[in-house]
Amino acid sequence: MSLGERPIKRRRLTPASRLAALAVATLASMPAAAQGPGMPLIRDAEIEQLLRDYSAPVMRAAGLAQQNIRIVVVNDRGFNAFVADGRRIFINTGTLSEAATPNEVIGVLAHETGHIAGGHLAKLREQLRSASTQSIIATILGVGAMVAASQSGSTNAAHAGAAAVTAPQEIIRRSLLAYLRAHEEQADRAGVKFLNATGQSPKGMHETFKRLADQVLFSARFADPYLQSHPMPAERVAALSELAKASPFWDKKDPADLQLRHDLMRAKLSGFIERPDTVARRYPASDTSVAARYARAISAYRHADLRGALSQIDGLIQAQPNNPYFYELKGQALLESGQPAAAIAPLRHAVKTAPNPALIQIMLAQALTASNESKYAEEAVSLLRAAIVKEPESSDAYAQLAMAFGRKGDLAEADLASALAAVMRGDARTARDLATRAKTRFPVGSPGWVKADDIISSKAKVN
Image (cartoon, rainbow, N blue to C red; front, side):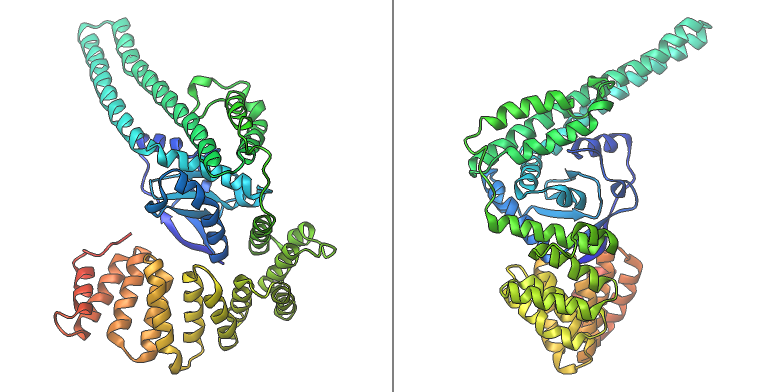
């Protein structure tokens, strides 16, 4: 698992874009991290594969299976999920940790899929354009009234002009908020529809929204229902309850193997994110389940007990010899403790057996390069090229590729890979400097020369 992966940079929010952000934060509010310079993300092969497996049937039911929609994990303890474009669903670690069953997370993903399938972002942009036009006209008319009043010396007329500026703005705002509430209701209905189409229970979705409604019930008692971006809790839960309980799959349970994977995900998040004393309370030594042992093993290696951690990880491998992520954990523990050569074998096994091993391939390549054995350089390059096909925006993959080419003595490719790593980090100046040097090392007109020239000319993507 990689904590604090390259954050998604946020542009400065205008009033209109703030409203757009509010519209797509579909459970509570935008996480605090999303309002700052970037969202701290978590990348993990096991968690991302589980979320892909959760979402795949829903995406097929929604007709989005070919859209390559990613689920991005945000390192935020709040219970939240949201869509920010038509390509990604963001979900907080808090949601994954609090959800007791796979069905609860699947329900959240079904709701977010409803936003994407309904084209709510595109519709909202059109509504905002319309509102902006109304706002401009209203402001011009209001300012005109104030100017006329000042010329005539009428105080009452001036106040009327000021009111003419603010009143239409409030009407427009209420109109937009009503539009957003309708989107939320539509996404709820779409989510239940997708779950029914895939033979899954909407109970988790219903219970999730009910729990959230109970949490905000007191504050909602005094809220103006016409100034909310989401339907009021009681109203929303009542509508969702009627729809969900009519499902023929209401009482269907999650498969035992899926529940185990869910429990392992929650344990992994606890082990990596939480303090050792918190992990010990949540997963005491008396709990001998595989999930509890997983959390304790991660916590041990994260807090300098490598010997104890390796013993616990070997016990996990013995219990589940076909679980690639236990081998990945062993490799990561060895690599991060300064034993890259010892990390190679378990990471190779994980790459062979994991269904989507791109992130593990990057880690294995790092171990190969860090071992200082030139014989591994070609293998590292091959692994990283394969990983970049799946992870084309990974700055880590390009940085490791630069090191692998350096081991091979291929300085032109090393400079080019370093430039691309800088591109993915958003460091345009460093990218151009490295590309300029790379360009002098490649034959004129060669593929590497062309790529370097593209970076220099700012034709390459710079985030």
